Length: 222
Image (tube, rainbow, N blue to C red; front, side, top):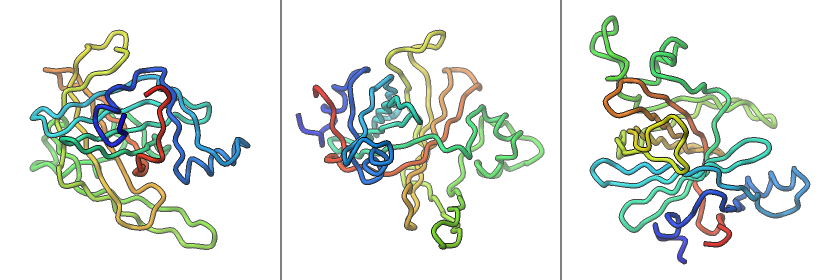
């Protein structure tokens, strides 16, 4: 089956084995003493986010790992597929919108019309995120700017396989994608907010990562 088609990624099931062999994955494999090869991951769950107006579908595969779980995202628009590998960065704590605001993360959202009286659920996400790349190897620290991608905030129907106990089978999600044009190992930034329908409660997670070529991903049995 052709890895450049949506059907390939839609055929993947939980417990499948996915091998990631990009440059960072090979370096990680060598560091672990596994040789010059990719890292094998087992798929523990699959989230599907279908845009409410049919613009796109995102499949988010949770890849189990002994050190840090990774997340393979297949973004499908019409017949095209873009692949990304993400992890949850330590500098961002997941939580609800009120929790994030209480932690001082007002910069995550565009300023409300009245800063003294607003509903957190109605805030729109910022159009750019600035992050500091730490100094390394004699190079000074650098401010990296992640800009909102052209599609803006994507409102989606959210489902997960297997379904999590105690949660509805179908929920709503907001996907927000950013990209950094500066030289950077992880130029992709993703926000995923998930909540129940007809509810103002939601949970926000953050992901940092990079794009992958189809040749850098292999799936056992597909």
